[in-house]
Amino acid sequence: MANVTIRALQLDDWKDYRATRIRAVEMHTGYFLADPEITRNQPDSFWKDALDQNGKCVFGLFDGVQMIGLCGVFTWRKDPSGKTGVMAMDFIDPEYRGQGHTDLLYKARIDFALKHEPWDKLAISHRIGNEPSKRAMLKHGFKFKDTQEIDWPDGTRDIEYNYEIDLIALREKA
Image (cartoon, one colour):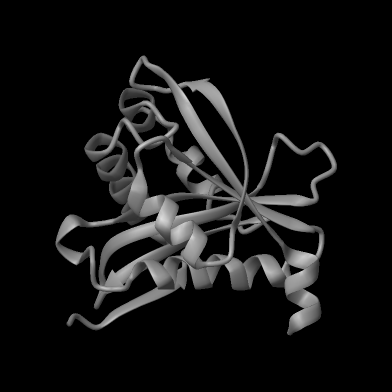
């Protein structure tokens, strides 16, 4: 097993973040709410702004110094109160999948969310048929909330399953 670690990305990691995110979106267009062409053409400032850690955090998964995955947690724009965080961008290079590294992605973001006091809950979602994501969400304590039909960047309209975890209850347990 590789010596895999996870850490919050800093501003000087933006080029690795950009390359890994583009690779993820291109490999799995049907599962990400991002268009590959738009992702590739984002200006440098877009990538740097994502790493400012102002109400958000992007984590890199590393084998040594090589970034092999990433994930993020952000203040959810769909909640005008600012009390909901949303987990997104889960990606692990194919050769590193199935080795338990997903636990690192979830633990890092949940730990960040617990410390980010403005958030009362944490949301996450997956597209219908994405069973690995569903299993990971349930394993890490997320509860099914609802479904909605949305337009996906691959040009299809399909079902998205939404889940939440109560951060107030988790903080009280700690």
